[in-house]
Image (cartoon, rainbow, N blue to C red):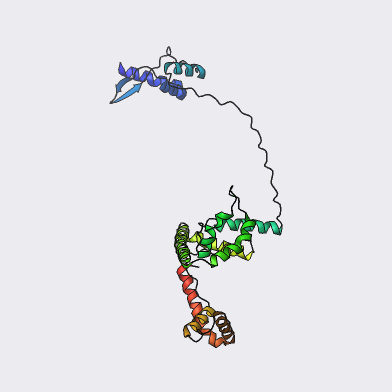
Length: 295
């Protein structure tokens, strides 16, 4: 029985061809039958013509999404963003800078320098001389009841005030000197505290700005800020020569102005060979200063 089945199946395969064989392999739904024949087995399958695959209609995306959302309310459907109109951006108008005049450039430079110079930030000073103490004590006598200063009246009374100061008693002078000394100490302490409140770099920048303001001849240009933290610049060759002449003791009997004039004339009369030791010493100090402070 089994050999006959195997031969029948082989004959059928030869008749149907490769196309039928491919369709049989892909559409097999029946169970396989194994038939032994001369020591080996032949496996074949039989398709069931009654059972044909039915193509499924694709489901609508909206229906499946709606059913899924109905089953699981946590799932949110993605809404397609509405199309928005793209509006072209307007180009910004380019501002043409007005060329400044020399006077306007100087005014701008002065304004920027004043910001860096720490102007009007120094602590107020108390009267530090006996005359200033005496004048400040009598200053209230030359004020109106409403507090407005009478500068004209004060100017006219200055001579009278100076005369009364000259005839003060020794005890009153000592009292004024004691107050002035205390005010000096207080002024120095407040000034030092103000300087230390700024960094050395800020003080150095402020001093540079103040120097430039003085060169521009700005009215009310302040003095240089004294800061012990700032490195001292090396002395010049002329300064070293002046120092050596003062230390020699040969000119101490003369007046200061006459001595300074004589030293200047001596420096001018020196030859290059005589000036060389002072110049070399000054250059060595400058090189050392530049190496230490990375100038």
